[in-house]
Length: 248
Image 1 (cartoon, rainbow, N blue to C red):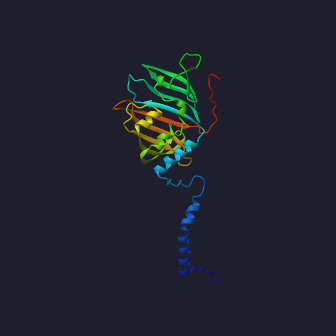
Image 2 (cartoon, helix red, strand yellow; image 1 turned 135 degrees about the horizontal axis):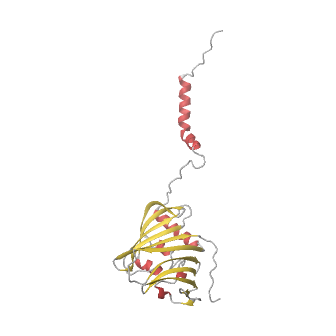
Image 3 (tube, rainbow, N blue to C red; image 1 turned 90 degrees about the vertical axis):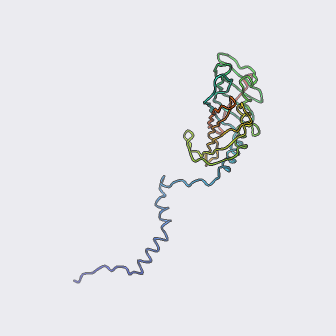
């Protein structure tokens, strides 16, 4: 029996096949990488300024928030707010512990602020007492979530806003944004020994949710000409919190 040889496709057929593969190439590549975890996330096209504006809107729309505040490079011999941790609830409620340095003595003070009244319980005290926030050299923490006077003003008053890449805030990946802030605005929320001097800020914002997760502020908070740092971490957005007056 004569042998049967397979016929090679003609040059015209090969040309058609090659053309079809080339035309379908992008589609084939995208399909082959469609397995779980195989496709890299597309880079965000939102500008740094738009991201800051969105973070302000999200923060203004949040009912509650948990915060952790810390500081570093604090000069000695000044009465300062060193840090703290607590919860804030809209419109004017706050509960937490503040770390303060008053007359060279560092102490943790438990505070509750409701409707403009601050209650403080000093170390070793059994009860809360109505206290002027200026005793601890701080604004009323109940204004923390105020759209006009609270944390959101750091975003509203930011200038020279620039993208600074990505970073991690706890378990969350954020876009970092640098900005300049008026010293007097920061002073109304935290403290400032020189309100005329700008404060350098780095915000960490989730691209997906638009939530402000971190803020690092560098400026003369405690003494003129001396830069110190406040680091703020935010979490537990909109989780229920129960903040009641200790007098109730």
